[in-house]
Length: 300
Image (tube, rainbow, N blue to C red; front, side, top):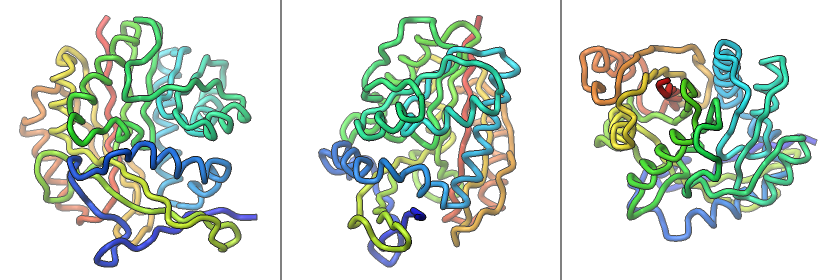
């Protein structure tokens, strides 16, 4: 038995509609939870059937495992853990015992994570973390999970509060990792758009569901800098790395780190940033899915 996703055609024959956050419908979060509930037991296999997505996920997991080994981290939290498979892969890459926990809102995915022996607690990532101050070494938002911190009326402030909550829960010298879908190679305003798409679950090439709706926010570099500054993280060491997820035709082209900058967030307007963004725009046309990997290190 093989599972995979097929993407339904949206308007103009595309597989996604790009809308503003204010255009996201009321109740979008409950709709997405319902979609995940229908695919939960097949989520891992179907996601891994997308070569570009799998290759980039593995590259990000390697990067996270490298951070854990170098820093000696032990207390790890993934926000929006899904079925917990990413934490399992990271633990295997690290090769030692870790206390790893995930948060998830969907009951079906919590059950799947627990079947994978991953500790998962029910939590809405749009709300403050329940963890005590200064108790975590590493907080992860993988696979663009931060995009679900979204609201048609108050999304920016909601994301600022989520960053403040994560920062508070970190130990001194702890780190926050945001694995985001970037829109820096496309010509929109300073804020990334929201991707609206519909997945159909196929088992042995036979549809098992109708089109299931999802909404996922994309991000731009300067937008991320503004969020970090608004959250009071200007005293942190910020590292930005880019990875290519897939090209316009759905092919994997590159999962290498195409550029690295280290800056405080209020300096995201500098010449080094401009050079990196110019490289992104010149090398890859619109339609390429980018990962922007943001790491935030809390001071001592």
